[in-house]
Length: 103
Image (cartoon, helix red, strand yellow):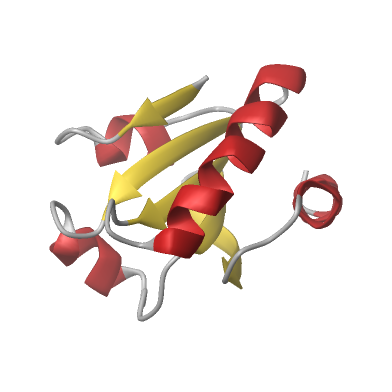
């Protein structure tokens, strides 16, 4: 299940004891809409990491803080720190490989 950021970014992404993939997206973004089902499938099939979605239009200060200039951008957080950034639509196999490399 993908958790949506609503003034709780620190709790969901930084305070999580699991590896956390944050999806920086916007509702109007076509590639972002294509990325969502891929993230949902990964989230539903693996319990060793969390997936969190963050709407850049509603959370532009957070997006700016992490250098998000293009969407979709996926940032993997481990122990509250960003460890990997992936920009653009990414398939499930590539994402799973990246997540496993950053366990």
